Image (cartoon, rainbow, N blue to C red; front, side, top):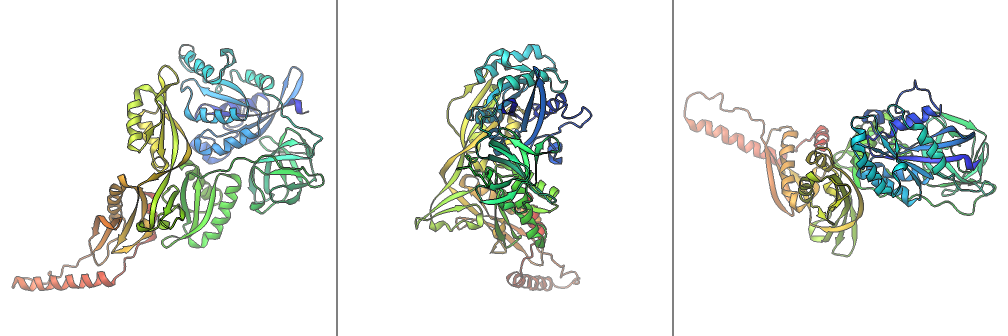
Length: 597
């Protein structure tokens, strides 16, 4: 019965106890036993190692309340801003959300960001205050509870105190899920409409499609039509998701499940697509999820050039399970054929690289991350430049625009001076005055170039605030910028693989640093190797790798000094001739080590 179904997700900042509460809910509903390991829904090794949720996971529980049996579908969500697309998809499949806040850390920036997504979808929010078993809870928690009340406009008694570690308050959470989260809306007699919110490639069964039935029902053996591609498949297995798949003969309106149709081509399944009945199709598809806009770009190359096709196949399968990943083919004179990939952030980029190497056993080289620039040419053309090698000559450029983000930083007010100094150093512009969220916690907003925060901004922010500050950002558009291309010449020959794009204010410093680093990475030759950095046609930095040099005067003992001078001059002429005719051999390890730096 649709009235006895509750679909909900969990919203929480990293390390606020989201995975532990999910474990306790599964234990309390007897979905799993207490002997099972912790972090049950975080089934990837990367999630367990890093202690974060990377992928959304769906699981079904059954719970008795006042003599009635209810079906609870939990769609677990990540907490980091780099996985906001996972969060938005999970929210779209739910009618309610648990808002979990660690009272020792209070409300964080990313918590508010994900909460705003849930409120836009009109989800019912159940506030939960976690870790009440810790010291001084009764003394210090009142202020945090008042912060939650002010944020949600709710009552103090609506906030549920919980200790996920000790299992305190779990029954109260389940009762509130039944009473405060509405059942899904839909018509079981209408033509089938099921929205795909996730998918996974399985080498044995083909692509596993995870869906929520909005209208109608799905039966085993039914002919299903994927509306965006028009492809028709037979549902040879359908079922619900507990910790393992459980086959069913029928899944009705409002429920969440999976379908196996033997699909092998990854391009035939799209997250956000609508599944309908081939014999009685729906007139229109359900509204799709918002398109993802990559924020950070980097190139991925196979370590071995003969692994190119294997890498392509692996990225396609990874994209099936990670819809926010985008890619296209590209080539490099230094690294061969590879792919230009778009990510939502640096953590997303690191996770994608690790998953390729662990899940698909493909060792890869990851280039320096950068952003996408708009270049307005004098001939009125507009170029989108993601790579320094595509950057046109300066005499053809009218102006350049770079992406900007709106960034909100939450911190204790005693660190606000350090934070403002950091953001101004990163070319940030204060948008409005500081707003006090609580008596000692402040929110400050900046507009900042995306290129300034994709490297180590978060680490620096934690350093200047002693770990208290948190931030959240979103893309706001492009603004004009004074961008410079740093071109690297090695033995007077241009090497595009070492060239980068930088703002004018930091270009000289970077040019000098690149030359110094390359002078230690490139091996010595039989002749001197000049390494030069060029900005706007001018050489701004230089380092020289000294040649191997034989002591030609070693056989001279005694005699006139002019004899030694003649031998040294003869050696110099040979070295000069060799430098003009010789070629600098740069091993692939140099490129790899440079990219790591």
